[in-house]
Length: 276
Image (cartoon, rainbow, N blue to C red; front, side, top):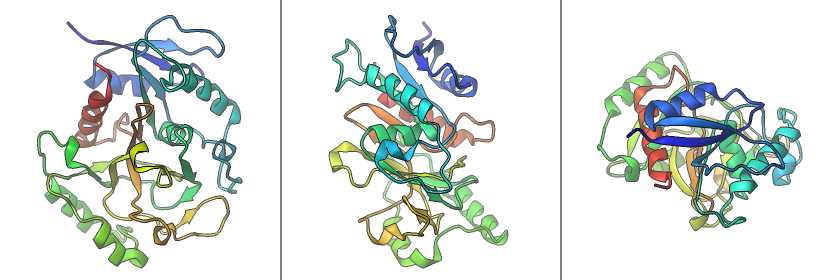
């Protein structure tokens, strides 16, 4: 019998490509449109937060960077979506999975008490990410493909790492046994910042294989080399917040341009976090 998932969405946002992605790997989707202030009768499996404009910095107590463009009304509406199903606030019969993609990942980071880097550069194209061995069930290894990408990108003159941080990069980005590298379709100018949370409040599932950015602007225009200030800083790509069962995926597995490896790994990770 085919699994049917009740997925709650913001009706003001076109979520069709995200729903198609979920249906491709997880089962048939019953789309439920959230209405602020009105209870939802159905039991929800996934509360979905999709891409779009930046999360307003007032949500995480930062001042606005000139490159930030936000919609506080959307933030407020989606905060209501989150609060309605947050098991730490409401005792529910069934815990849901909060799933955020791109802007949605940033939103989930903020509502889980993390913050954002308001502007980074060189994150507007596909690039390698490293996924923890914990999620590499099939022990797939496509490092030859990654090496080919690296050589081709270098030949094009594309940045593949941060030369200012080369030694730090070598130390931080050492692959552990079973870690998986895939090419992620990713385009964003803001970045997740969960690092000031306690260790049990977030799990770094995937990060950029190499530092892509040399610009990290927090709540001002000044470039801040935060990697020197934050212990074990890496550029987050997939982060899990266990206390609220929130999965934040910075890349775009729903896009047609996404590699099969990236899409399938995202499906596997989502499936692990779904409450059976």
